[in-house]
Image (tube, rainbow, N blue to C red; front, side, top):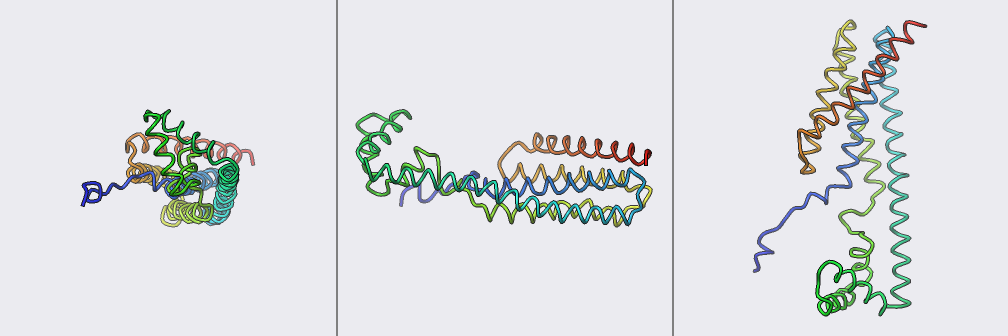
Length: 233
């Protein structure tokens, strides 16, 4: 048994599809729902109306995230399928040229020409389209577009994120609603940034500060707008 079989590596890039959708969904759920609640509450609206607005924002946001992710990632998947179909046709029409093209790719990465040609021949014998998809087009199983996975992940995590500021509407006193929702939402955002960075192997502090800053800015702007329009109306 070789050392490579004993030492199995778990690369984090395999998580990129669902992790991106999960972090985006949860972050948007917290920020958009908290901002909506803070803006409505700042307009001196009754707590019951604030809760209704928050629930409506949760449902609308979850459906919007699911639809948006599905359409966006489906477009990516369509592009990948079109490229694979085009590459398959080129392989069938001119396999020798495609082999030379693959070899040139390896030469460009530092492989000796003779060895690069040998590698290209062996890979094309075992799976020509797979080799070209991976090394020429940059398409692999780990990063391939999965529309349904992205849609469901975004909708679910948006709902979880939106439920956090909604919970504060239920438990916080009416006079402290804006402050309680803002503080709790910033705490949730900081926690989300840390968890997302940890899962993706990124810098925890940088991710935490980034999501917290933009969340605070969004809530401050909506609170200001709610206060102005609430006073005018």
